[in-house]
Length: 255
Image 1 (cartoon, rainbow, N blue to C red):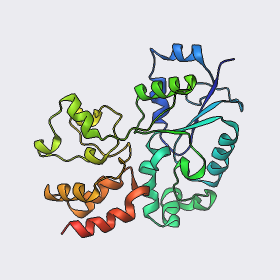
Image 2: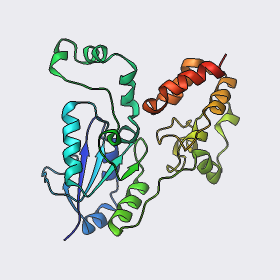
Image 3: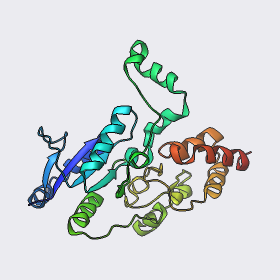
Image 4: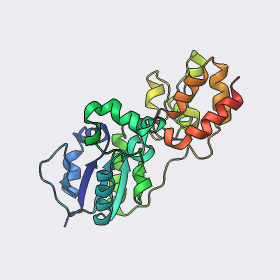
């Protein structure tokens, strides 16, 4: 029997699932090898029997906690996909404010009808077997991860930086163009798509192991960025990981 795959989404834009649907030339080959039993963006049917669960989105409500735990209990393997699931992502900005303030800002007079929690990564709630980073994930990485899981090939997280991929692509460093970027401390794997097309890396793939925050902060400060601007660079996608550390380091290294 074909392995059964299921796609689930929590608090997110579902852009990572749309990336999977963008695999127009490869989808038929995937469907020859697996049975997709749950995928809200693509099919109406829903099954509760699956082998591999791909989970998009951060966890922000009591109901989502229970649902993701249920998914973990049924799946042999769980893969978190995208910045929201792996890092908390843009949604983690919610945690920078009092919870009641956020609830009232969003829901106004209906605030009491919507229970909400501080943002958590999927891995904060359940055991995750692999993480696919990015906002959104790349089609190439999804194919690689899916094939590896189906063939039982061990997967390893990428630990080199975006700078490595920029150099491989022959890109002129954005700092040499008078712009800024945090690719030097950001996990690679996207083929440096943003810098390649002239936009600075915002860190959507998370930070490399042992990132040199002090050096990056100093470089950004030397280029004229203010304390709030530097803080935004580090916390846009990675607020759950670095907010307290970065606040202290910015005060220490930026005059």
